[in-house]
Amino acid sequence: MAFGLRSVPKQPDAEVKLDLTPLGARNQVPAPDTPVQVSRIFLEPEEELRRRIKLRQSPRPFLLLVLSYVLGGLAPAVMDQGKRKFSWGLLTLMCVAAWTATVWYWPKLRSWIELGTLPLLPCMVALGVVTMLGVQSWSRAVWLAGRDVRFVPERLPDFMRHPVAIGLSGLLLPGAGYLIAGHPRRAAALVWSMGPLALAALAIWQAEWLWTINRAAGVQGLPLNVMELVFVASVATLLLCGLIWSTSIFDGARLSASRAGQRASARADWLAFAMVVASIAFFVTLAPEKLARNMDQLATGMRLDAYRLIPLGMEQVAMRLDPSRPRYVMRAAELHEMMNQTEAANELREQLRTRWQEYAEYLLRQEAEIHAMVPLRPIGLGESAEGTP
Image (cartoon, rainbow, N blue to C red; front, side, top):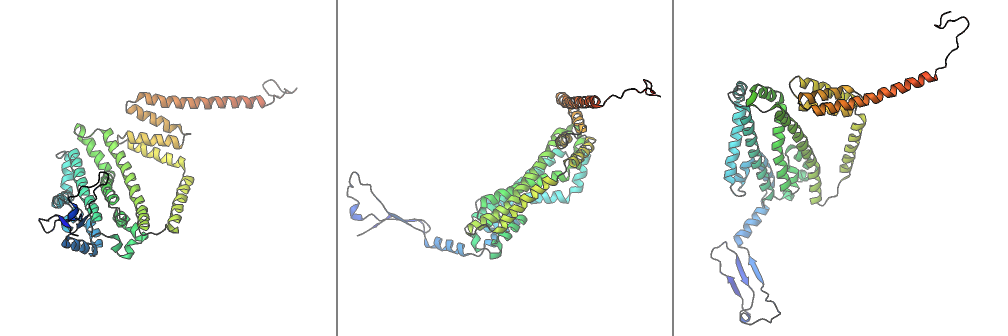
């Protein structure tokens, strides 16, 4: 029985399709209800097959892992990964050059910003854009490294695939644990989150200087309320990204153990139990009165520097931690008045007045009951009405 080629390849690397339908049966008319079944075999060119086998056997997983973190966006150009690798590599070089120039010329740039020659807001925006572009190229490099056919996590050294080593690698190199566990998308997302975390940490570190320069800029700077919101958002971003980073350390080890077919070890259970016990001990030993007093003192100091939103939040937290202190309510009402929020200030004062009125009524009732329980002594023969003999 003879068979024929479905299509003749025009190039050596093209796919070869074989049609296994017998030649004598091609002109036959099939039955009405019988579908025509054509079996096809796609033969991969021998050179392509050899190349794939060579890539699978290439001892480069460790090199791919290291280069994706060390070189960042330049790694795809070096390791020949993905499309537009040279464009992303050039963008990475520009971001590195911008940050290097900023650090190198920082004293001069700082003096220009303080003198008002260089506006603060465009500098902040430009630095944020440069940072996020660099982190995006870094995240892309990690994602391409995880999807590379040469990256086979099982071919990494044995010590690197141990759960403890994976946790340490995830701590030192964000997302490395996910990459070893075979989850490049999660690894890339975690690497991308390092950009907002770095910007938030920088904003908190230089908060005092940024606040002073912004106040000195006057109308050319950001409104003070907006600047305070930037600081609040920086703190929230720092806490959130830090929590995600710390969680990924244990999650990467868990996924790697699942990939290797291992059960969750008893150490992981004891570690989770220890974290729960530590959380319970923290809340049990927490002294809310002392914490409220510290927050009130910090809020008072920040009020002298023209802060409003952050001290108000601290006073509100102090009110809930220690409701017995009316001082926190009064200072929160004062901050509301400074922000032209008269209704909120009056509401707080009304709540305080109601509480004190209830307490005063309680004291009066208690005093009346005490006087009613004290017996009256009769006046003796040798005592006057005033109690003198």
